[in-house]
Each structure stands twice: as C-alpha cells, then as structure tokens.
Image (cartoon, rainbow, N blue to C red; front, side, top):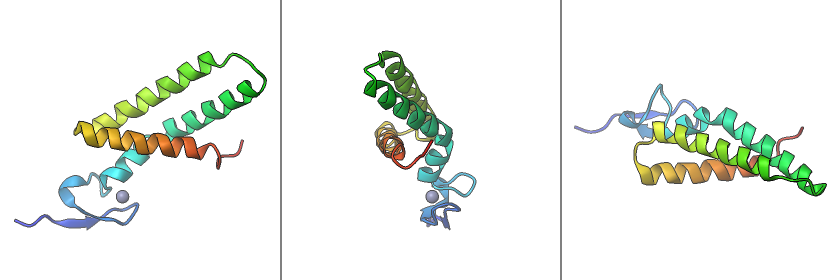
Length: 106
Ligand SMILES: [Zn+2]
C-alpha cells in the first residue's frame, strides 16, 4: 500500500499523511507548538544582553533561559517520539530562537 501524500497546510511541503496531524507536517507541528516559548526565550535572551552590558548579575536570567529550553525540549518530545529526531528539532528551534532576538524589536 502506498502512503497517501498530503500538502502541509503551513509550509506546503508534501508529506505522508501518517506523519501529519491536523494537516501539518512534523516540522510545522513543532514550530507551532513552541512559538510562545520561543518568544519567551528571545525576550530573556535580550534581557540578559541588556543586563550584561551594565555588568549586572545574569545568573538568574541564565537559569530562566535554561528552563525555557527544557520546556521547549519537553514539548518537542511529546510530538517527536524518536530521540534522535527530537534532538535535531530541538537544535533547530533553539537556533531559530537565538536568531529571532535580532529580528524581534521591543
Ligand atoms: Zn509543514
């Protein structure tokens, strides 16, 4: 039996229907599920850079950032059962989160 291919509703990529949920491919499911955490991550990251510029103690913010990253990892794990793939998704989301701080304006 050949897999049924559908177009992801978000990115338009063609993916086997077995890998989609609600019409979205795994990439988009992950991206959409962590959007709020990614914004939070970017916010904290900017805050840390502001604090650092004034030589303030940034340990607490660093811990907050680590917590947000843990929560991102958790959500990805719920969507991606395969460990290796989950790690790959996490790496990409964190990269995106870190890149986002340059584009997001206060
Ligand atoms: Zn997609």
